[in-house]
Length: 359
Length: 224
Image 1: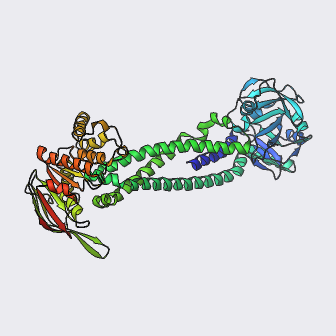
Image 2: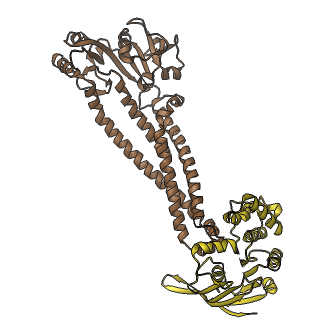
């Protein structure tokens, strides 16, 4: 069950990537050629900032918004996964990223060079940040002016600041990670994407479909592995449950023999075992799932430096009802089946032999 | 209940060879009599008791209870016979370890479909009969050997059986406790008109028995 809990968390991480689908819907992302894009964000790579002007002059472009995107790892700890991301973008284009997501408190940075930032809710809770708080980033003191109320994992762990400020902090002057292009209604994304790639050298213009096509095989592969791991773990769990039930029932053959000797109907032992195994299965799977989720959160927390308590609000995402139902149902079924089969086998042995063996 | 056996035989097959545990046993046990079966270990006493208690089926032969061939009845009926008409007392008590004394005695009553009030009332009465009312809430592991045996007897009497079969009921008890158990079984036999069949090595039991059957190598070698 502990292992299944970990599997559930891996599934959650995969779905966090899928969540990014909601960002930049219908828009084209222009990134440096050869850069790998995870649904909405490029991993590394840069394009010159003046590419923006070239794109804006291409026919069919309604708007173009430059973004810088940095993954931040905890410097002091040996962690494998980023604990937060920094996103820099023009101070008048926040809605390109956040859409209609409201700020929980405060407002957005006022100008392009302001040393101000908006932080995601999860980050704000972790570090006790609120409007007016100061935080040191790359040796600059940044002021928190707003807290973004978003359930999307990446935005809840985001530090959003004006483009120029981000470029300065991360020594990225004159460069951007990507440009978000909105096509005019008169042109399709595919056509505009082709046109951008034709007119500007060294860039890739990815439509939403293309971005999905890039990440989908990876996600499918991950899902397959995850399914395989989960299935293997479930099988292992079932074997364990069946073995424990088998041992338990085998040890109690004496009791069943006594029941048989005093004239209990043949179904008495079966009914007893069925009820017991259902209770044990229910308790075992419930406790196992809880322990599994705690173990999974501890592991993810260790490798991301995100405090465990911040995972609690999204417990229902981590452990969806369908997974609870599947796990509990299967465990109860296996436990029950194991118990009944063992009891049937035990019942085949002569009561007199068992009672004699109890001496 | 009168019991009669005709050429009762039980053969066990162990690997390639056969062991004749009970060999053509012919018995006649009268209602409300106290019968002992004596013999050395391995002479077939326990196997014979299991056959008489309908816990086992003979390879050959017949068993009649009040003239009725009990081997003709189906498994369900045999269970009913065990539940309602036969009380079995094991040498090693075989109490259910997770149930209290009271619950162990209530068990056959529950299986017989008695109401919970009736179960409680009867079980308490039987515990009083065996002198262990004060131990009703104790688990078997908190009881002495003698107390466990008395609880086992109370359980055997729960459904007011016509036959009580006891396999070496004093085998694991000290002589004083053994004497108490013998007196209890004897009292049951005479006061409640229960047929008591006891397998034993204990001379104190044979001395109070109406009939003593001697067994050797699975066969009845004599009686007195």
